[in-house]
Image (cartoon, rainbow, N blue to C red; front, side, top):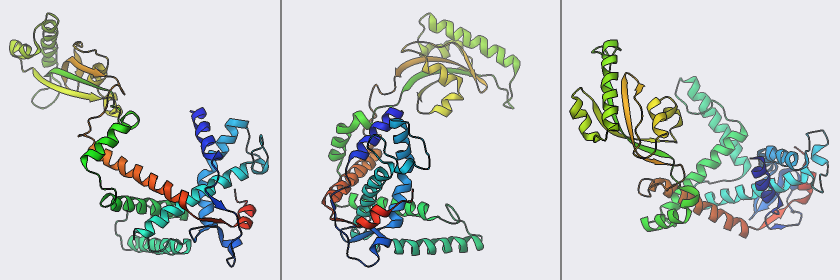
Length: 353
């Protein structure tokens, strides 16, 4: 896993900050307030700091895995193989900040956000926290925290606006028909839509509970004997359909599918655990679970990833994945086209790690 993290981080880190135009901004107090401008919209030092915090654990992990670098007081300014953590994290934070600002600009163009300045965000945060406090004072129900911090509310607003933008675009420019979704599914099913493991079984079961839904030991012994007879009949080749009729003892027959993704549920079920170990056409022994005895015949046991989920059953998930893909593609295109002006004085002076 660490190797995979390192590989991913290497890719992220070596990508240069997107299309930076290296000139000092001629804006009053820009060295204090802004790190960069994206299409004329400022990335404040607070927004840049948000991106730095979000990257901090990744960068520390990267340098530890690649160089064995420990977190000392000199860590951020020490050169490891020509790489300095402070410069690496700033480059990544700048790239991430630019991408976030582009997402905000898209939301503004779509009419989802009226003002994308950080000052406006802080005013919204203050109003939201006041609203939540009033609701608490009036014993009203609120969802989420009583009071948001800056980072949590920034992520909350960004996530909500992104969801609204995707929804809006999916109703217009990106609106896919079933053929489009099916093409998307076919192109990405190897990565996204491999089936979970599952086992399809037929079951014979017989209760040993009395009228009060309590275990009756006499009924339990009789039920065990009946199910052993059923097992012997199955072993001799008797068709499963004929076994309940031949025994005439209240034996029930049903069909069920156990999915390997239902980990918690399966862990509590001896029947599910037994079913997972069977091969096609194989019978289990007699199994006890929740006041009943079971006998299982496996019809089909599919290993996880051996097939694909049915398109018609997961169409809504495919639609969501399609929206996510279209959105990321669009954001990437807009980032590549963005005019970025770096405030070199503020950027070079930044040391808040």
